[in-house]
View 1 (cartoon, rainbow, N blue to C red):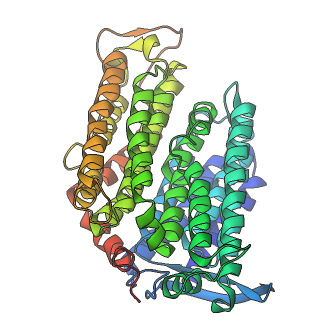
View 2: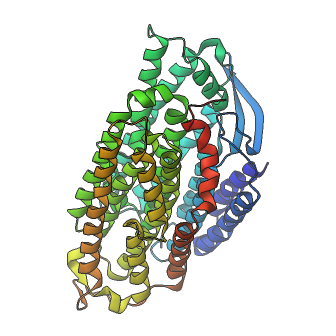
View 3: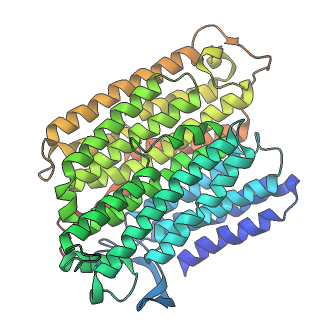
Length: 508
């Protein structure tokens, strides 16, 4: 019942915070969020599972109970954790706690509703990363959209309504495409499955595949479902050309929402790609490996080039997320232990680094009321600690050794370069590696303009040192980034144990 406790604490905490007085809502939400954070760390320390959750693995903290039946197939409350989901669960609880702390300065209206929505998002995200029944997973998946839509639409910037609607429409339409494709797959599997449990569906796919549906043969149906689900998840990642909702959402969202959006919500898409497409459809992965790798490299280069052209710090970090997620896709399609393991490691690493970068940009914005690179310079003289952490986070993005970004990129490049499944793997890897040069270019350009030189600010605000609680939050994230860079085996061994059954062709 540990997973249920984890979700319940966040969900009940959200309800309590909703009705709490505004003056105490922030501190109350922080106190409540410490409970899931502590529980997730205890689960991490006590983790005792092996293999893959969908491929006959030994799940940790597994729980299953019958729920209802649809079309002769049962739906159940089915949750559990393996080496892929465990690091993402910890990432979720830590970033939600720190996002609440980062809200104390900028959020000064309707605080109880704001913090309640943060805790509600946390509960739903934990459900996404632990649910092993498709219908249960889809309920959590869709429920995440509502609070994020409200956070952007109510507490966002001047164009918040446009950004919130665009975010909701893009991601919801993509979810419908994915949902329809997966339901077609389940019924196409015929009598070989009797439930919507993901392990049963994965086993049926790897042992025999679908029988066909709508006049499509088994192979054709599998290909249609694979492509439809890939497109549905690609919007959530997002990868080019489905990325256009992301910069608007980030720019208009309040800083805590941006932290969660980049740090955790984007990982829903890559996590789902790994759980569904790259676990259940090995033949289709091989068939579509080259176009997927091409999309990944385009996302890396194009996202970095777009970031290079921006003058808004938030847009720079937002477009860098598109580039970073391209690396994840490249690692997944390499279909090697280091490639897929590195992609999963990059999910965690990028969650920490992007969360740190958005937090640092938010601290600077709170002090200056501008995010424009052209409006400020010499910030190091006025905010030395915050700026120092911002620089450290930028170097993490660039892949500085002994930081998590370096470890993640090394694993991905090593795995993709030696991929036997992916044709032209050396070419794709080399092109993706060039993206690091562009990343260094746009980050160093932005830092040179805003951090160094004589102090100048094109606003009337008096800039002082960053609040202690913001500095403390950033130090925690920076410490985790360095810890995973120095000792990647803290999570990498756990990840590869769950990855091995996938890259070995799904042998049961």
